[in-house]
Amino acid sequence: MDATPIRAVLAGRFTPSALRRYLLTMFSATAALVLVAGGFYSSRSTFSLLRTQISPLGSPADNPLGWPFFSFGVWLLSIASIPLWRFYRRALPVLQARVSGVFLVLYLVAIPAVFTIGLVPPELDITAHRVLAATALGGFGLAFFFSGIGFIISKYARNNTRIPAALIAPFIAYFPLIAIGITSQVYAASLGTFPAEDTWYAWALWEWLLFSGIIAMCVFTSLPLAGIVQKRTTEGKSSNI
Image (cartoon, rainbow, N blue to C red; front, side, top):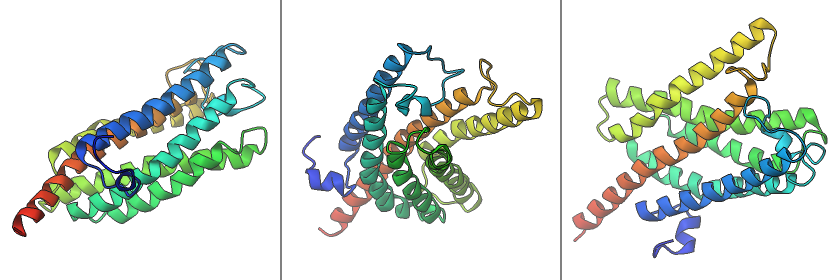
């Protein structure tokens, strides 16, 4: 991972190039494990984004051959998110926005929930599994939702020039995803069709879209932050010469 020492990566001290490599490795490995789990699931029951929610992939009953791959995938995602959280903890205060603490708390709450999902399949305790899934998706999802609102207010209402347009741009795509997703589920519930399988407002589809959206937000918010941190570090070293 470039010349960045492993201990620096574990501490969340990424250079932009090291962060790109880390994100590519982290999310590619997670995606590969989930895809393998989905492939084994398809051998037993037809997999469909409009019908198959995320949880059945990690169920020994529904996916007897593929569930270990799903569990390893969520464990990897959880563990690999820790250095990324530590990176956010270092980078966000540089922006001097008031939402840093909210983001860090929500993001941190989601990490152990993701890990525990791999230990608690639906058939073991369906209620606990649903709570963990809601905490995981909700923690990550709300972290980006509330921070995005805060960044936009800080930049445009309070004229915070530390926040670059490159950091605002991902939220312009993320907010409509959340708005349409919530609207679709309210609509399905009003029709009495939730989880509305085989339709564009199926819960399974929007669960996968939210999961993918969170990963995209991790990538497209952390990369501009890495550039900001590197610039600030370079300027600090220059001023000390």
